[in-house]
Length: 452
Image 1: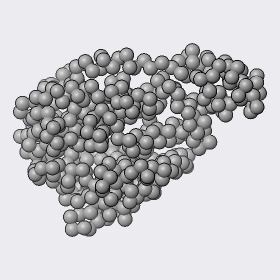
Image 2 (image 1 turned 135 degrees about the vertical axis):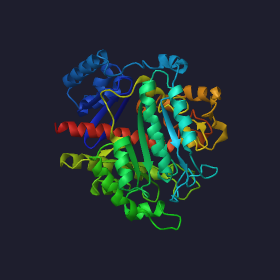
Image 3 (image 1 turned 60 degrees about the vertical axis):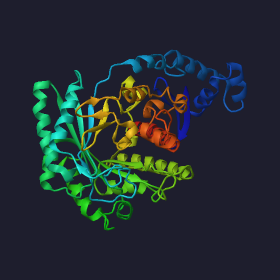
Image 4 (image 1 turned 90 degrees about the horizontal axis):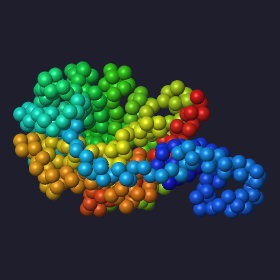
């Protein structure tokens, strides 16, 4: 499978199955576009009015060599392994601990309903969290590296328990030959120097929730009294980012149809001094006034193009930043299992509620159809686990012929379920944005390599 596109003056050819990327001139681009469906004579005849015949034949020879070398028109070597992937034994390697089903903000797009997750407000007890870590160790097999994300709601509303669980996790490392990687997601309202110091010691990564410019953030992320949160949290986030040497954190925003010009929000992050950032499209029912729809896509595509050019410009000026969706590794990429089946939700990655229930991920919490078990009994719904284990880019018709399938790994199962009632579909609007981000990412690589 070949994907061709033009971006920022570059002619880019992606060989999907091998991952090989080629930046080519016009004649090579045009010949590749005709190569599969035309013989040599037809290609020469159709292009001879534009290019020299001898040059066309030379290009055809070069393409044949690249094909023989496994860099163009390669076969799909992954699909034959899919049955083995389904049958593989999986271990739990990561938990999302819902340490607090409560929040001190009232974000308008919050899928967690201000931390309630379709249920009651609650804080996780140390005892429940302890059982969750025991469950993780017990079900992680021989895997050494384990990850625990303290999530909410707002985790800092239950900070003492967070610290107790970190201490308990550390106590398990040596006896069980495990290494815990703790992460924290926070809105920053309760952030202080003591918490920053502790986070810098124990948290491998910290996600800081901020939507961008003051007017954008305060419209969507207010306190319950309607007052905006920007002025309170931004100085704290700046201090934390500097204290972590601008590494191992993300400023993470959400854009809606109220700020389709989200590239300005990313630039605002950079102007505030942040180096690590992400801004995600909101995922919401079309009935919500802030929801992104298909009609918004042309403007969103323009914004990604604008952001890509700004990204290149700032890197060349020595004041670059990292944008999560532009960080594609074209040389190694994820392992085969991850390329085919994604984040591991429902199999390797689970969410734990404050009272110890287990769900496939944080976005399924509260949906009883996906209740897997609890930290006392463990996973008791093997049928649900099997559904997630069988969910991959080949089980989704929309993914089979998509050039981005090995970069997004089939997309988010929760988004698929929420829009189509099955985890084996795809959220169409999200897919369009994902494809655009992949194209921008590859173009950025080409542009920055020109400078080297």
